[in-house]
Length: 347
Image (cartoon, rainbow, N blue to C red; front, side):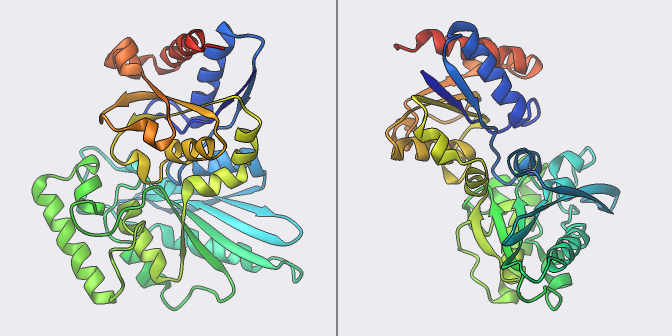
């Protein structure tokens, strides 16, 4: 039997490669004769570059810039070249990610301004590709930010400076709009430390910014990254699911087609899971190829119809071992849960 293990990170506890390794190890403990294929995934948020570099190789450039509150940070730029294309990959979370926000968080002040220097460097790296290169592309992983500024600093700084002939792709982690009850501020503001009053203030700012531009704030995906997707679209970016970008890089559909069972997972299965996250991408690929898909997650906060999305069974660490071990002993607990899942497999 062939098992594909394709999880996202378990935020705050395990990277995607660590999660894949833990799941694979647990499965193999019970079913040592199975062939386990590890394919760590990402959705455009933290870990985006790590997963892409493992799949594509490429050259990493270190860049000095500023974090969400103006503090010095070092970001990475991944440049991948082949005979016909040069692509530079950027991870917004390395510049203005929630993990870089000082505690307590200051959601009204967090900014995407540090991305300007990184995007300029990315465009320059792509622009210097040889004359025979047909595709020049910059792909920005848009997720996991501490900011909710609509990408305004980025759009304003680069409005007249984005080079012609360089494709810009916003690899979004969720397909949400900029405004409203399912928009950037009201959906993710509380996770970034915003009080109810802060959320309303952030919503007002985003509304004012959208009105100033005249662009459509209802497009699915422009609310990703605290609205960074919106700012990038103003620069001409094409929206694409971050999980889809990674799926192409790791040849997900080909590997699903070779598997008898697919195991995916993430830290929290919630209402945003089916709006562009890794579990949705992997489950969709499995459903299309009529391959059984299970999800191993840190916790499950909604009683959603997972089966309707292609996941026939969900295993939750919080349910299996309790919330404390689920976070404090994540790797070992995930291995144990994967072993239990393997023991339950009917084949």
